[in-house]
Image (cartoon, rainbow, N blue to C red; front, side, top):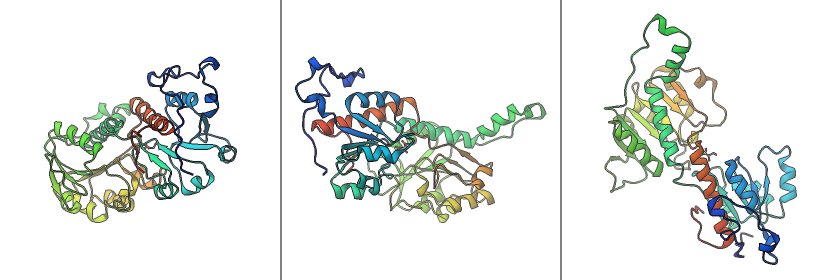
Length: 346
Ligand code: 8YV
């Protein structure tokens, strides 16, 4: 259990050409005796980029529960052979069903949908896909902020509904000159901060600890930072420590002119306090890409005009998803070839 195979599978050797993306299976002449039969079985648990899936299918014996009519049947059939999961969302119960599981290659930087403690207890390796999605998430964040500040969804509707003939669209506010408090200044947070700086915003941040090499002011108290900020951008990992961290008190501190952006996880924000504050004018607005129980979005949020909503799409660009899929493959290949894992988290 959890034991790593170091049998050289030849993934990096022609004819696999795995690196160039022109992967093909070896012909019998190209296959060394015994090699063809050792393609590990992997289970795909989340929709992956088509190009990644194609490569996986040439490198591995792929089972998938994505859109499967009967996921349990897929699991039952592969239970004794599945050695890896590509995708994520692996509960302890799912691990139980896979006695030969060695590695979970999570597609996504956040590994909160997988039971890391259960994986560790079983000696199952967990990897993620950091960095390659930073730009995509940062661009969406800026887009959401502009959409909220200038009420772009409403402006679009205004034109479509022919209201422009009756008068001009109301004046809105700009980002320039405002202070943005970053809840989290990790890899993605820094990409967001850099972009917002170029908009003329003052960036400040709250996190576990001060980062001496960062030019921004650090707050050790989130409430204090919220008081000093016009915008609060939430981009920290979901964990026990960050659960509900954007509390009623933090929302109140942001105040009636304040705006909240969440591109991290719904669990970080006290959603009912947020809805109350938005409904009563104690918070000016919110732009939300993530929610408490996705894809469920409370009707009260849907009814509010001072929110911009998006369907957890921070990393949903062609470029990011292709790179994320590639990193999933890189981790799996490294694991089965006995090489160094590019991005191991557990
Ligand atoms: C994905 C994410 O949307 O990387 C993350 O943590 O939230 C996003 O990239 C998520 O993994 C769901 O597929």
